[in-house]
Amino acid sequence: MEQPDAQPAYVLHNRAYRETSALVDFLTPQGRFRAVMRRARGKGGSLARPFVPLEVELRGRGELKNVGRLDSIGVAAWLHGDALFSGLYLNELLIRLLPAEDPHPVLFEHYAATLQALGAGRPLEPLLRSFEWRLLDELGYAFALDQDINGDALVPDGWYRLQVDAGLERVYLLQPGLFSGVELAAMASADWDAPGALSAAKRLMRQALAVHLGGRPLVSRELFRKR
Image (cartoon, rainbow, N blue to C red; front, side, top):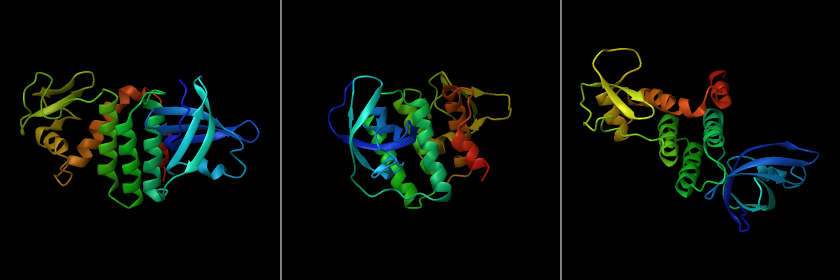
């Protein structure tokens, strides 16, 4: 697939390649691409940093593209501390889960908005949960938050577990790791002020993402834990 026209982009990851080049993973509205950036460690190499809004021209028909042109087109999201680790987490999720060259323009816009919100100091947890859910939805892995696997509406005093390939299943024997109907209703309406909603959403998203990530842990999550 050839991409001759310039398009907006963000760098998800880069690493040294040969003597002066870099191997760069880009996120664009047309999908995730990997490309060789020549002279990346010389003048202009700073453009290969994450969180900088770019315009990139990618050339080539194979899986590995070449960067024909790369320009900064906006204000970078300067992330520090926990916000920086959160941004790295988003990037790693996209690299691990987003198929190459699969267009997701809505996800691209959501990613750009999330970076700006992180840079502005907005609370991290709601932003991360919202992005995880959008990613699952874009990839076709989302499930209903207002009904169970039988199509019945969730009840506030009910308890549910996630069947990743199907949705939420009501259970009648209490066990660890369940989600209450009240918590799920708060998630469905993004009511993050509701008691327990954010912690339950974090558990739910981890369960939903785990099967798609496989057994390999996320590096960004480990870094965050070791801070």
